[in-house]
Image 1: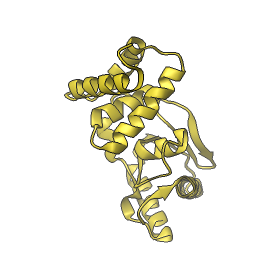
Image 2: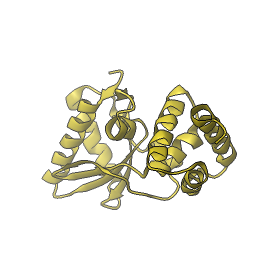
Image 3: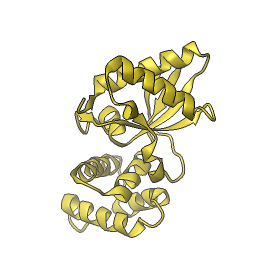
Image 4: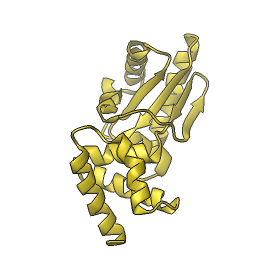
Length: 180
């Protein structure tokens, strides 16, 4: 398996909800990274994995990993198709729109500002740049100017990566909107 499409992600998360519900639980997740970009913004057609942060129930990490492994076996996917590797880029916790709500599972995106901060902090490759460009355009379309937008992103920046993120933001802004 090279990539997960919108349909793959929604079907797998629906299955995760079904398995959680069979155990009498409802999972609440925040989807970040590529999965959020695929589901919330249609910014790309697929992603390599589904990065999550588990909000509820507390202490469900091992159970979620176990259920994800079961789904991986059913679909012949890598065991780490669902993971929390991106949590190192989460500073604080914000809730954006609900991306998936099925029995046993509710999955949110983080706020657009937080997702943009994560992309600016990571700034690893062309995918991060393309994702950040998309998110910046979403925020500008919501009527935020450069200064307001930066102030909304700043609290979510990963400590130690603030300068990289600031330069990345400036480069993106100037590429899209000039020096205004």
